[in-house]
Image (cartoon, rainbow, N blue to C red; front, side, top):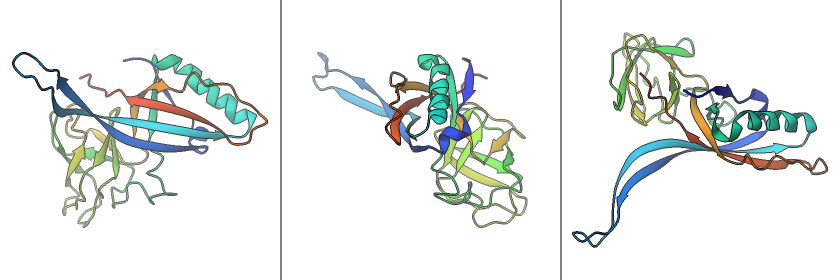
Length: 216
């Protein structure tokens, strides 16, 4: 696994974000047997966040530049969370009742590729333990809850997630529900590091591609 750094909290406060999934398809060109090209898929889904920073002071600019330079053109990965899933926009994260603390746990083992997981240590007997769109962090991977789900009397819930599990999970593995993060490689924006301090609110945009953790 490459070196990993975390984006400073101060930069989230100066940014707006698009945090969307990108679907990757496989394709085949025309051949002697099939004159029409075909697309099969989607075969995979990856988070592809885009952050736009409005920077109006020298100190924040230096922090931004230091962060970008540490990414070394994509050789170093950034640990990022989705800032749109915050109290300022959608209310609490998770928006469902979740657990008594931000960290809950896997209740049953599940293999890589699974699209449902069972989570324990939730607030018991809740009609909505998680709401569609709530974010979960398991290991270094980021998932979104696909459908609303409730918890039973034992504080467990079966949760539909996307993308499918990048890596198998085992009972008692932690699940982070507060500002969960994934790993991302910078793919665009590192070339734009010059700031004109006469311009207030100058915008810089960074585009990232998810690098799922699939190492057992």
